[in-house]
Length: 291
Image 1 (cartoon, rainbow, N blue to C red):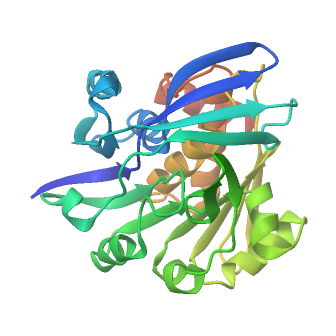
Image 2: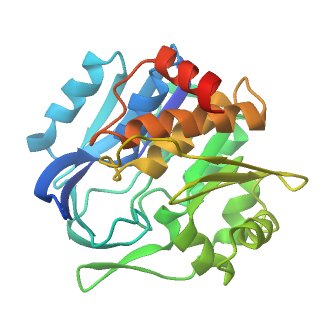
């Protein structure tokens, strides 16, 4: 059994991004953005992902950054189109061209972790049975709500009610939502009321991101920080970067300190398209000067 501080789980996605600067195809997937964030300040990081053989280059890229990889072949990679139609990163339309296979418990045989960060893109990718298995290990388990309310309808991604929430969330250490997902799940557009309602559903901590920053609620207090960036070029992967850096930091830091670290790291990621590629020293410097 090989043990890691952090293991990221999620399918690779081949993302076609459309915004005011044009159209391009990039390597996506929450595990990809997340692992690049956590490896900047954690010693042992691994990813478990499913993808088509034609997209194996993403595995080589991660290995060059010192990330252990456990790729599982799939007939197809997940292929998404993300259309950002305004300057607000929370406003986008998404469609699906193909899907990779879902995960099963056997996909994690031989590895263990202090924290598992689950980044499914769509409902069905990471089932409740796998979350239960990871939670029973005693590890910190962080999940992204998008992978439990997003479904494909006529090739377009839409939300549907999270019928398994009452089963899944009591097993979860940290639930991440963006402001749109929070409103859909709770019926409230007010982020403070939304995280209160989400906390009542069972997760130990709620991390909510919106255009200007991030908010954490643990049932007794709320903590909030603003993003600080010089230019907004790397909108895709914002939430993946934020939850991964926050969850990894929570292994040793308090909620306020972990949130400051996560928001600072995510701010630096937002300045450039693609996964985080800067140093922990730069993050620490931004925390000292801005938070």
